[in-house]
Image 1 (cartoon, rainbow, N blue to C red):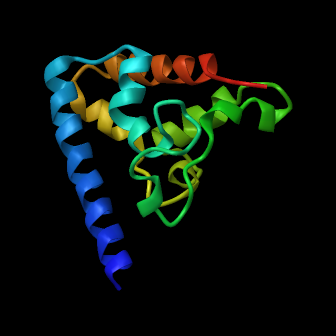
Image 2 (cartoon, rainbow, N blue to C red):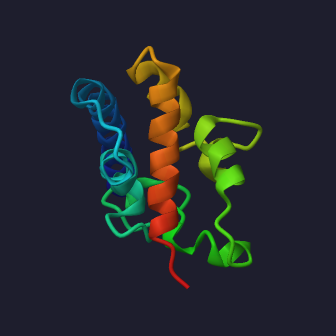
Length: 133
């Protein structure tokens, strides 16, 4: 029971941190892919992208190893699929309802939709840059 309670508290803390990070990013005007990754993704996916972030243990579904996306897609980085996933297209939010869909959050951060697209594009470029074989 204590383990479940700890997991719930940790997950709630991570969600609260995400809200603060969204507000902070609006103030900071983050647009660099690596900065966006470290603000929004590293909590679950880890600084190295391998799925071992500090919040990972509290999740029902293990976060994906983001360094293996191309390897799992025949060596080609799945930019189209990821763009849909990031933006909340027809696929479930990042394979799990535990992970937020960042497209609407990026759009809410600034009234200029081209800035939201720039954030998503830069985040995808960063993810592509960390691919391993």
